[in-house]
Length: 156
Image 1 (cartoon, one colour):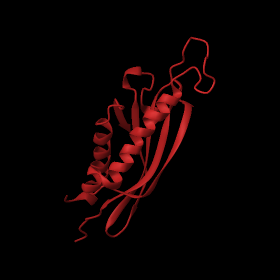
Image 2 (cartoon, rainbow, N blue to C red; image 1 turned 120 degrees about the horizontal axis):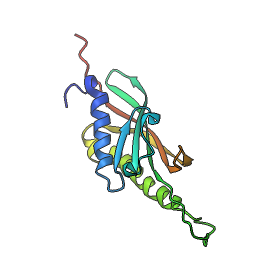
Image 3 (tube, helix red, strand yellow; image 1 turned 120 degrees about the vertical axis):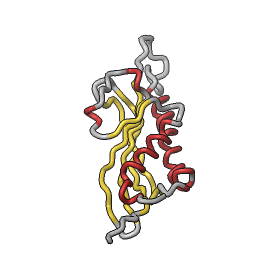
Image 4 (tube, helix red, strand yellow; image 1 turned 60 degrees about the horizontal axis):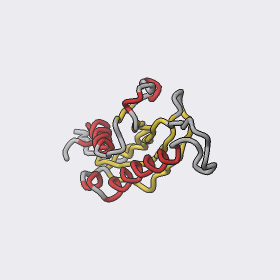
């Protein structure tokens, strides 16, 4: 892989996007400001959103601090609540499914095809659930982690 330092942002975000879209539990992958996305369209869910928080440069590597949000729309049942633990919606199903999406992404960065392609997880990922976010009641997980790629910028 040549010129990864020059094109590191493009290559990394494209690799993560493609990995997420290969998952049957992801319909759409976006990046940038999440408030610019029309989250009212139900057909785009389940959705993952990639945020590059910052990049630190070292002599041999670029380290990207990334957050990936994996989410879906919570559906409320009109029937009476019969299970107080699970409630009257699919929130736990969403949390289970979207955790699996992000866990797979992390494992592929840790020792899968992305790792082999030189997109390598640095340390551990931190995953935090969210509930009732945004105007159409989304639930899911936000994973934050560091990925390093080779910095092969030629200064000559």
